Length: 337
Image 1 (cartoon, one colour):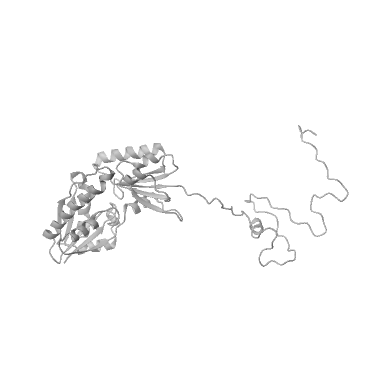
Image 2 (spheres, one colour; image 1 turned 90 degrees about the vertical axis):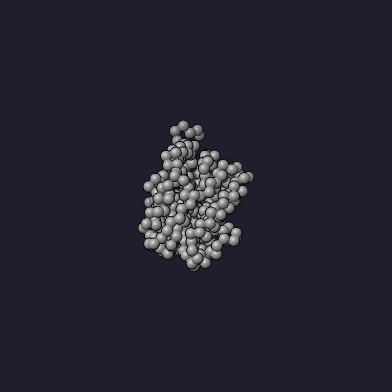
């Protein structure tokens, strides 16, 4: 039996390694790294740095060229293109595990972010096992995802109170629009900046690229045409400079206040007055007339307090004596009689 550790290593900062990930790295004898070409050499270098810090000698690093993938396929052909690429990757894994990992040995794959989130390693290993490859067993070590890093860098929560969150891709966002019912939508794998079609809808965007690395870029704000153009230009410049880019973003709908919300009283006088239905005493109150609470409001209260009730047998303040008509006020200047 060959044993594998599929280890999430975080979004790009070596400090994001968990204690569990460090322990798993220390148990492995062979590490499998896929080379994606010279443009992404710094990604390979970061993995090698992690191994120098945490792997235990003696260990081996086996490097192989990752199969090319058709990223230009239109939506109807996208899933078949991914299936074809995964099958070619499974054939590569099967050969590497058979030739480079002895029976009883411990191997490891170092996976960006979290292995369960938009990464193919687990699906490819399942295909290796189903296709009659070497006898395998594997454990998965979760990692800090790019989504967790994005929200941490922007100092925001992933969700709003009582609201749904959805994770989708740029392709699905472009084809189907903003998902209904989700207040917050995380978008990954967006090579064509689908958010540019969603300006003017009251959305807020939190965008990040190269998260957790020295090249990290963050932009956020109301999703206006100007900000959409700025993100697009920044992304294009960064990709041209480095030869690759990994970015993600969160689209947030503003939270709407409940239509039936009742403002809270600003002072004790109105809080007491509003605590019982009109014409009914509050629970526990005696049937006899109670001494009125002082009608003097707190300074911050915007609601004027009612005048205190007059003692029994006396007319309310401002009532003219019996038999005398109320005084007619003098007209204001410009008023007609």
